[in-house]
Length: 239
Image (cartoon, rainbow, N blue to C red; front, side):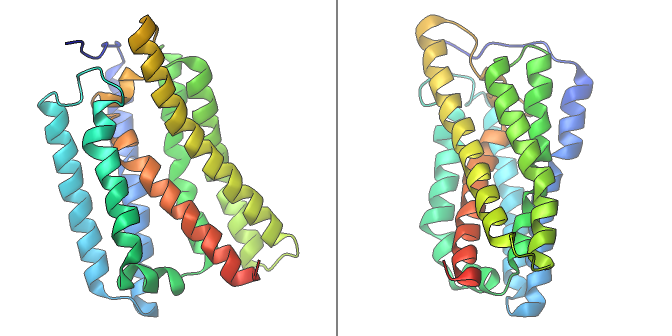
């Protein structure tokens, strides 16, 4: 049974990642908390916070036990975390009344600004710099995330200021961000298959501590956020 390849990385990189990775969870919780005043309830805030803690505990335990270490296609980290989490979001959470109320009462610009947490994508670039990820994949995924994150601030401002080009801008931005996360997810799987077949570098680093948090959390969460924004664009602009 093959196991993941170990790539030597400086300790400061893992520490910096652990400092940065709470950002997505805190932004989402802050967003939910603000929506409570507009019609949602306290239950959502505490329930989501508790789920995040339990989910992070679970994937940390799985990593510690070596469940992600086996080389397989699809990668074990997807089978044991990403896929179940995605089914939970799209099969259950998005159909709940609480979720629908929060989205209905939220401003489009606030949903866009949530994507600011994708600055964490800079770690793709750093991992490539230390030869832990294939450079073409990591640079495209990393810069795609960073561009989406930084531009979200300007897109949100255009929406808030009711600029005449806001609808086209947010639509283009949302398409770009969706393509970026789809590329990252699909390319990672393709590289895994190629790595198994040929022995060339894959994306093993993303299944190791602490970077397994990226595939375990990001793809389903970001895709759901983009889907919600598409729906919100249709509601706000009628197209």
